[in-house]
Structures are given as structure tokens and as C-alpha cells.
Length: 106
Image 1 (cartoon, rainbow, N blue to C red):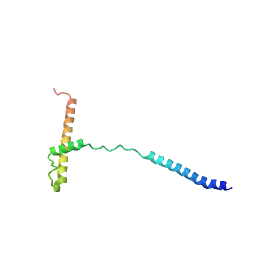
Image 2: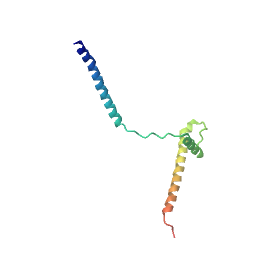
Image 3: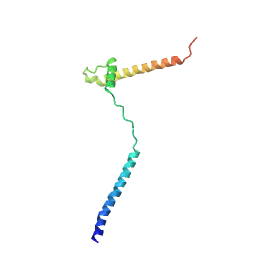
Image 4: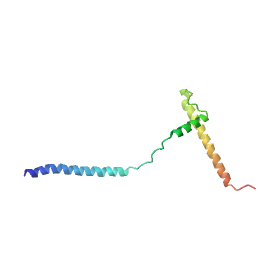
């Protein structure tokens, strides 16, 4: 009789643990299946940072000036100049493309 009562004492908690483990595993797999993987953000390279700084310096930005009172305005003005330069370059390329597609004038 004693062995029967011991089997029930050991067997029941073991069953509970097995069922709980199965429920947890099933639940975690559902959560994982619902997550969507997003592409990793582009890691900026040192060469890209150097190129951007060279472009900013080419339009007049001086990072070694040391005057923090004008910092945001200075860098924003330089970034606007670089953006305008890039837009002008894109427009020039687009104009060349349009000129190539146009029929020659007599």
C-alpha cells in the first residue's frame, strides 16, 4: 500500500511539470512565429562618415572652429548646401537623360 501512495505523490507533480513545460513551449513558439523580422539597419562605415565630412567641409563647414553657439545653424546650413548640390547633380543627370530621349531638332 505504501508504494501505491508514494507513486501518486511523485507521479502527479511530474505530470504537472510535463504539461506545464509543453504549454510553455507551445506558447513560446506561437509568440516567435508572430514576430516579424525586420531588416537590420544600415551600419554607417567610417569611409561614409569621412566622405560626408569632406562634403560638408567643401561647402564651408569648419568642425574645428570651436564655437558651439552657432553649431546647430552652421551644420544645418552646410547640410542644406550639400543637399542642394546633390539635387542639382540629380537634376543635371535627369536633364541629360531627357535630352537623349528627345528627337533632334531640324
